[in-house]
Length: 182
Image 1: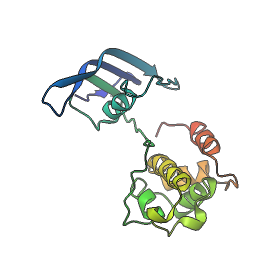
Image 2: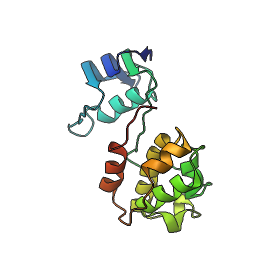
Image 3: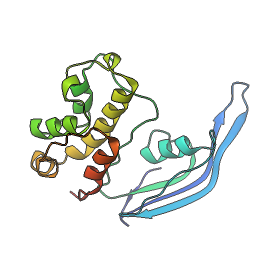
Image 4: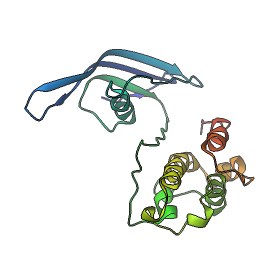
């Protein structure tokens, strides 16, 4: 279950998570896991392929609710995710894919975001016309778009200067330096 947390911390306790196998058995994936992060704290999930890192992130995001335990997010918390593989709607343009996560973002904020990620000339292209690197930058734009939803004025102020570089670290730095509170 996902109660709105009042502590200002992300807290999770996973007692048990398993998947049903093709033969009808159960594959235990996660268990006995407890994590708490306060505002501004950063954590890294490290481990070999198949150890449950993506499953844990899917649980935190609310994309997987079939587990025993509790996830408590801070009140008003908004999460953004960039998936390992592009999850884009092929019938929508680059700009339309971003607008799905940022329907209230101003044109100026979107322009700055696209410039920062080197996607300006691809705004009217479809995902199938992008390289894998461009598609991954589009995913970063979608994730950043969640934070542009707050208000056009705030987004414009935070992203007022177009950045010529199109690397993810610069985009992350832009987002990290913003105050995440509404």
